[in-house]
Structures are given as structure tokens and as C-alpha cells.
Image 1: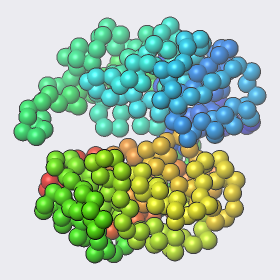
Image 2: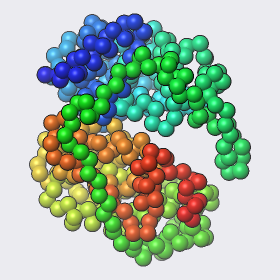
Image 3: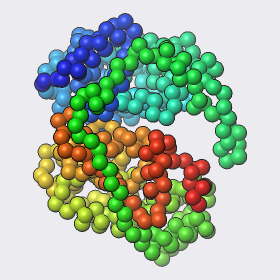
Image 4: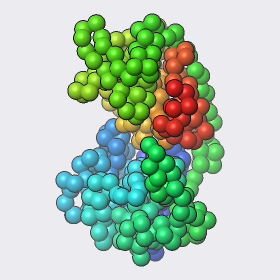
Length: 407
């Protein structure tokens, strides 16, 4: 397997950093080859047994990359949900999409489990977006390592007293501490020596992302359901099923779901009542090889019923013919997978998260792709989706505060 010169250079520099400081952060932009660079770096460290933690849908492609590499160390690849099952038997830990550990002020269960595995071990961090929303997200990423530059602070609260800027926010009329405001320049002074960055421009990417919004009419069923939820906070279907939005958060989620033809009930089951978007995609992209991202589980069921011979494995999709369809929930498909053989990426619905927006739209990009990566957003006329799009495109999450301004 032939790596690019910049990947070899970053691996060599990463070797110096990890040998001196016990960890290194490869902050390479999406599709620039973080995985291959980290596998090469592991080989240069002359370790025997490596654990690679990633998202479930990325596992198969990493396995293929490792087989092609010819490296002789043993590599175990697991998803984040399986971390708690692992034994502490590894010489090196590689953490893919490391920004997902950045929850604060309390670490997530996966972060706590990783901390146990990383005791006494060198760590390689991978992410194209290390701190997508706030530099406060960096603390728990490094907290899992014994060699954290913030090792003097046992928890986030202690760290924030030194690096944070005290602020307050109001949630449902309650005053709470807002930990997202921090002294960015001070933090950068402490961590910049651990980061190796690389951009798509530096890698020579010629393929740009071209986005387009395609609109579908709002059906009478969708309009009726939104009106009922926003005015009455509930509605009853012809079959007697009741959908309730008794909190502001539920109301926002229900409106979001309804715009794309599904809605979840309180018992956890969902109603699929409008296939306008799915049929539009089927007709508009007929005979094209496309990947479709959705947000809610019921949307996936609707899409798989519409496209009966679809794929959920990106490797199989990339090998398939010219009219193949890949279907994935955006939360699991936005990171670590390659969809470069697709003619277009179709977004059935849009996530509230700015991270989801920026990462999912880059799934078709590769160094060797010379034609534009086309991303199509399918929005309902008069629906909430375009409002969300405008917010996440500006690198801001869509929140309840924004929803209340609309309804």
C-alpha cells in the first residue's frame, strides 16, 4: 500500500511527539487519511498489540486498510459501545473521532471506560474537528490519558476554574452555569505541541462539495399534524393512536419528525404516515448511485421499504453497480466511512448538530476525486428543515431557543 508523502511525514513527526509526551493528536481534516497515518505511526512505535476504537460503520474499512498495510502487529478494532468489554492488554490505544469524548462537565460512560484502558498506555487521537463547539470539549479527551497536559486537574470543574470564563445561562427559566466559555489562547498554549494538523487544501483536494436544496410540497397530512402539535400539543390518528408533545423539547422533535413523514409516540413506536420525500428521491435520482442519510429510525424503515435492494455496508456499496443505494442514519454514517463511488449524497432529513452537517457532507470526498461531491438536501416547503440548515451551516447547533422563535 502506497501512502502519500504527507502521511509519512506526519507519522514521522507524530512518532517524535508521542515518544516525548506519551500522546499525539492527529487533527487532520476529513478524507485526508488519518486512519492510514495512525496505522503507520503504530508500526513505527514497534508495538505488538493495538486497540483501535471507532464508529461501528467504519470498522470494515479499517480492517481492509490494515490487511493491505502488511504491518505485523496485532490490531483489535471495536466500536465505542464495546469499550467496557475490553481487557487492559494493549500496548497502544488509537481513538478515532476523539471529539466524541468531549462531553462536559461530566464524562460519559464511554470516556470513563476508555480512561481505564488507557492507563499507562500511549494514545493516538484522531479527529478532523477536535473542538467543534467549544474548547471546553478538549478536557475529557485528554483526561483519558495519564499524560494529559491537564493532569493536575482531577476533574472538569477544577480545570474550568483555571481555564474557564464564568458565565450563566437560562434553561426553562432556571439559571445554570455555562461552561462553554473558556480562555482559548491559554488552552492552546498548553496543547498546541501535541497537535499535528493537515487540511484538504494542503492535501491537494480538487473535489469541492456542491450543495443544493430540493423542495417537496408539504402534504395536507403533514400540515395538519404540525398545526395540531404546535397548537394543541397532541393529535389523534384515524386509527386512534395518540401523539403527545407535552414539553417544548418534544414539540420541537415532533415537528422535525413530521416534516419528513414520521412521528414517534410515547410508547417508543413510530407512525409512518407520509412518503412524499422518499418517493421524490426515488424518482429524482432514478438510475443513479446514491447514498441517503436520515435522522430518525422510522425514516430508515420508510427508506428501506422504498429502496428494497439497498446497502447498509459502505464497503459493499462501493463495490456495487451504478444504481446502488446506501442508507444510513446520519449519526452513525457521518464519521469514518468512505462513499466516494456515489454519484450523490442525499439528505432525507437534517440533524440539529453542526458537527453532523460538516462531517456528513464530506463522505464522498477523496484526494483522487476530481468531480464535485454533490450533496442534496430534501426539504419540505414551509417546514423546519431549512431553518435548521441555516443554523448548522453557520457552525451553530439548532436548539430549543431557535425553535421557540419560529413557533
